[in-house]
Image (cartoon, rainbow, N blue to C red; front, side, top):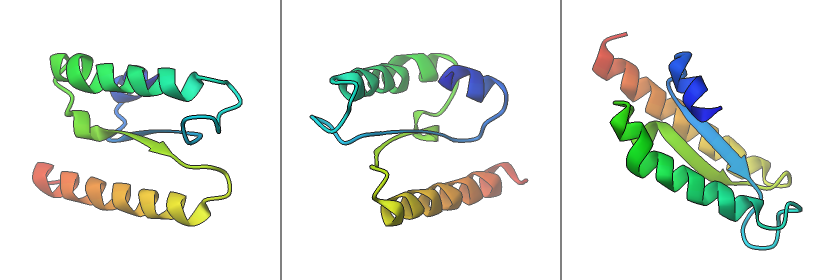
Length: 88
């Protein structure tokens, strides 16, 4: 789904999940997710010409609204910077 989002033109992608270890009801799902994100950022995205900084992994629980807000603000600022570089 991450690659598909970039293929469809998403400028940034964030994957969010429970804090590891132990907060995830999928037992080790967040650990597997982190491994997948690292592989994408280290190998797959650069091979496809996608800046790995466009993919972000955040551990945010449903009770951390302020943290989610902060991350969204940072991503909005990142998007604004990207637009200035591209000239859009």
